[in-house]
Amino acid sequence: MAKAQRPHIAILPSPGMGHLIPLVELAKRLVHQHTFVIPTDGSPSKALKSTLDSLPTFIDSVFLPPVDLSDLPPDSKIETRISLMVSRSLSSLHDAFVSMVAGTKLVGLVVDMFGTDAFDVAYEFNIPSYIYFPSTAMMLLFFLYLQELDRTVSCEYKDMVELVRLPRSVKGIMVNGFQDLESGPKALQAKQSGKPSVYPVGPLINVDSSDKPDPSGCIRWLDIQPVGSVLFVSFGSGDTLSRNQVNELAMGLEMSEQRFLWVIRTPNDTIANATYFNVDTQKDDDPFMFLPKGFVERTKGCGLMVGSWAAQTRVLNHGSTDGFLTHCGWNSVESVVNGIPLIAWALYAEQKMNALLLSEDAKVSLRPKPNQNGLICRDEIAKVVKCLMGSEEGKSVRNRMLELKEAAKRVLCENGSSTIALSEVADSINMHC
Ligand code: UPG
Image (tube, rainbow, N blue to C red):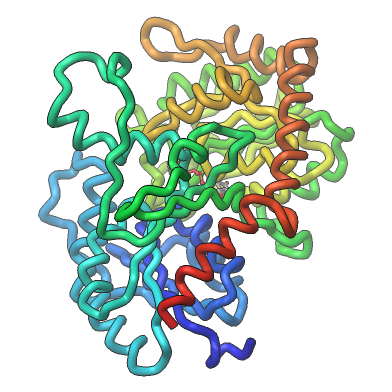
């Protein structure tokens, strides 16, 4: 369909690559024209610009004027900053809507979980709103029930009988999950009158083409490693470890005697998500400075460290990669589609819940144990890495992941449940045309 004829959807990603990337993947799969309307508080990162530069022609993007967050205390939480960036952008979003409705048939607004304030703007223009929830159905269930829990519960949440209260101001919620990975989608799918529909459309992941540049050199390095030999170590788009933890991780990787590719960041002793807004524009110290003395030389040949950012989807799709030590950001669980088993090392947000789901429920990951101070020590790291890459237990985790890979293929094929759910969303949006 020609661009001008497509019904038009406005998409508001809340700040952060972990929210932009899944919304881009959603947009690619809906046959509409899309405009990403992007809140910001300053200059966007290189990773963000390069994602926007590579969008297909039916997806446009526009930055809203930067908002001022200088009144916030320096230690304000990331969730507060993200939410305020959205709410302080609403008048500019209104202006963007005026331009969009003037030139095209605007039929929907899609936001992620931090963008619901924008519903007011959509409501003013009589445009239906949808949420794309880039995390698990389990987390969605928890969010939906949180208000009720807060109001009524004084005991431990785990002792509660589960009841779900769905919000009413939204038409539909898409969640990046599928039944074989977690049972949550089923619990949410039961249709109830007056409640929004929940569509499990996952796993939606970005597929980087192999002709993209490889500035960090990690693909060239993987090309010369033996098939199925490398552990990929990466903590998402913004997570940072403490100095001590970086030291222990380096020593643990060395002691494991396994090949590894590690995306390293400058450590931060106080915040676990220090690079969330500026993943590749860090003005801090060189992250290599914080590695143990002699580590780079000693691991030469079997280990590669790259600063800040790697072509993750290409790494996970590479034949040499055979394990992934991840912070359990839900987009990183994309390794499901590659059949790569995991080491689950959660840091913040809902990542501990994801880690639990991946290890206890889906059984596709191993989980290192922290000591009483919360530090994961070198011996524990070496043990878990060896176990994943070369033991019977690792083999069983790997086999389970291969089963999930097949299940993911099934739900994403032409008549698969996620493809059908996505076309139901498109039908629902098109009813507004
Ligand atoms: N990525 C790269 N290269 C890198 C690092 C990351 O391409 O070097 C990509 C990765 O492929 C993925 C995204 O960036 O698509 C990162 O997303 P994710 O793995 O989910 O991590 P976060 O950016 O930390 O995600 C935030 C939250 C996480 C939550 C997720 C979805 O931290 O807890 O599950 O958003 O809501």
